[in-house]
Amino acid sequence: MPSAKTQPARGMRDFLPADVRKREYVIRVIKEVYECYGFEPLETPAVENIETLMGKYGEEGNQLIFKILKRGEHEKTGEADLALRYDLTVPLARVVAQYQNELPKFFKRYQIQPVWRADRPARGRFREFYQCDVDVLGSRSMVVEAELIAAASDALVALGFDDFTIRLNHRQVLTGILDQAGVSREKHDDALIALDKMDKAGPEGVARELNDRGIVDESAVKLMHFFEGLVGAQHALDLVDFGDGIDVQGAYNTDVLGRLVEFIGSHEMGASGVDDLRQILQFAKASSVDQRIKLDPTLARGLAYYTGAIIEMNVADLVGSLGGGGRYDNLVGMFLGRDVPACGFSLGLERIVVVMSERDMFSAQLVSSPADVMVTIWNEDSISESIALADELRNKGLRVDVYPEADKLAKQFKYASARGIQFVAVLGEDERLRGEVAIKDMRSGEQTSVKRTDVENAVRKRGRI
Image (cartoon, rainbow, N blue to C red):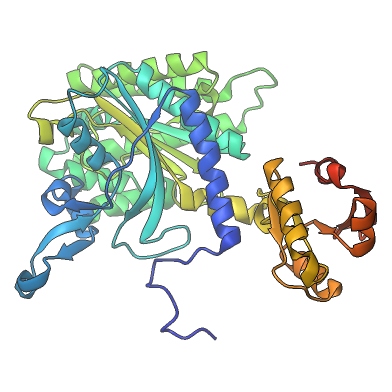
């Protein structure tokens, strides 16, 4: 059993080669999709000034920031002046404020880096983890929301997901609902925390949470009546056989929009939010991603800086989301002194890797093979020639490992097999005299000899590289 001295800190992990290959594969796919949408890369430091982060995430978020004590002679004060990056959004806002005159009118950036949170570790939740962010700054158009939803959706599809749901809501819609129900403004945050648990706790659990948070009068009754109606509408749709070609999700979203309009009425802010949701659905339809979108008026998302649309992506067998985001038009203004329209979405790399691993969505070669071929060493006199062969194959684009010692051939084969390398190239005395190389397929056990100039083609053809 491993010693506690060798284990990483709780909530942190070591990544062995197979783990790193999985992560790099997911990052590569996401990058390719984001760049197809015209997003540019950005990186920021792991450490920020503590005042940059504090006060941006709400009370709960502030408590999860990893603070760094002052160093040297100031350490004894016990005060912190720096902190580990909590997310990638606040550093982005700082960058936009710092480099405003050097950035384009509409700044489209993606950023894939680790963040740190002093959270309680759980399945798929760690204290150090990667975020894959994509953001657009400079536009208030709902085209931005629709494009971000499409980009994140395309990334999941490219990774092999086909069963995810995109939950969509709007902070102004929530404000309208709570105001029209009669919930006092000072109780809005409590109500949002309760409502955000609807998908996990159900109506009864939300009702108890509202009661525990002091929302017990007629406002609680109105709220629960509205949201229980939505749950009932979804249940009714689930029982109906609409037949092929009928957009069931679209029918549900249309019903939700109608219920929101009726409940919110003349509430100006709430009605504006409903119009935004209607536009997002309309624009998303142009890229066919609307069929994955489900309007969910219970979705709140905890971060305090959201001002408009809020989004989450979920798969059925994961507690929590694969990603989330929304509009945050006021955040850059905290640094710049004037508001800059902004909207973003973040995919959770660790959760994606966890689900893909559990579902066996990674190819065996990706996970287990560090090289396409391994070159053996026949004896001490042939070392240079084996190295030269490896160099030739690498120059032709193959991944090539070289066994570092003149060992028994059986041991070299066993080593290649243990590392998951499919092909082994043997440059024995007879092969060298004939200008050939023996190639052994470690999966089938078959061994054939080919001309040295044909090794690359043989490996690619048999391994489908």
